[in-house]
Length: 196
Image (cartoon, rainbow, N blue to C red; front, top):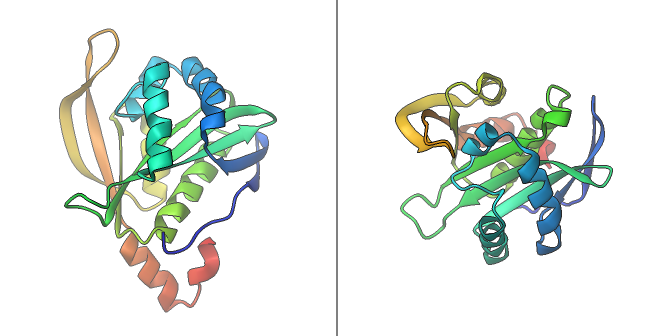
């Protein structure tokens, strides 16, 4: 990363004070409890079902390996959201990152998702990435609207791309954002420190 953000960070939302901090192995049980409360359809935001302990353990291994940076949104002592930045510096697209994000039903519509997406976006800026993508099912309109408000635009529709636990397939929309352009605009305006 070209710039490290410092954590924990605290944000005031309509849901109250939310702490953002980096996920660690010690958070595994709390994140599992959070994931197991999510509606199954929400888990389709993610390529793997994090409500399964073995999947969550593999996720933590990827965090420790440095391939993933995950932020937890904490209200009181409960995980209410998770934003993840995934990148692979050894792939053909080392300049591209993917955001994966889920938020608890208990805090939806109260600014937690927006704050978490902005914080994850700022991580991507600090990581020196040029492009970001995010994917979700086409019926997750609130999430699509949220990411479009951050400058993401639809780039692809993948038909019948994910299959839920009941065997039903769902279309996925892929949104992209040219963050190199945002970084350049911030530098041009002399406010590149605004996202720190």
